[in-house]
Amino acid sequence: MKIRRKLGLVAASALLFSGSVGAVTMTSGDTATILWGGIYDGATLSASATFTLTSLSETEALFQVSVANTTAAGQPGRNRLVSFGITDIAPNITGAEALNNGVGDQWTAVIDTTFPGFQTVELCIWAGRNCAGGGTGGLVEGESDSFQLRLIGSFADVISLGDPFPSKWQSVGNTGQSVEFGGCTEGRCGSGSSVPEPGPLALFALGLVGLSLRKRTKFQ
Image (cartoon, rainbow, N blue to C red):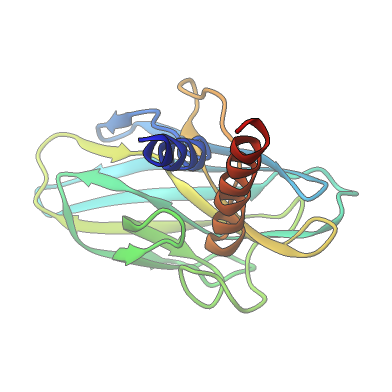
């Protein structure tokens, strides 16, 4: 019984790293901005991606996307934003493509893929090697870019973009780590924290177990 409670504490603590902030529903002409912010290894990170739904038909949704790494200059690390995603899109999409790629980076969009730390997302957009990162692409501090995004599906009058909008960063902070954390849509943001890569997250959980067992031994 006590062991079950301790494991429950570990699971709950891990869940604190991500949260649910709901979905945003859009019709043609609407704009939604996703915001990211987190502190990790000495660096305070921030970024945004603005989605403008320029057209919506029965089979296609076309967005103009503007993405910016708004991290302040002078932070430790290069703090590259390399990928971001949308966990759930309604109606479900059957295809995605990044068109008229940006000036500085070649953006790629894929559906139903794994975003490490967040499991499967319905849409991932990246400027690195793939959704999980890698390579030297992405936006460093102060950089921005824009591109068109084409989503294929069976649509009506609206499309819904659902959280937690994961983001992937590389070369972060004092030791150049990789880190992920969820975002929220502007006007719906609460508090959130960074999500370490699966390895550090597991170490964090094991640390809680060790601390719990140490306290148990001390008071027996």
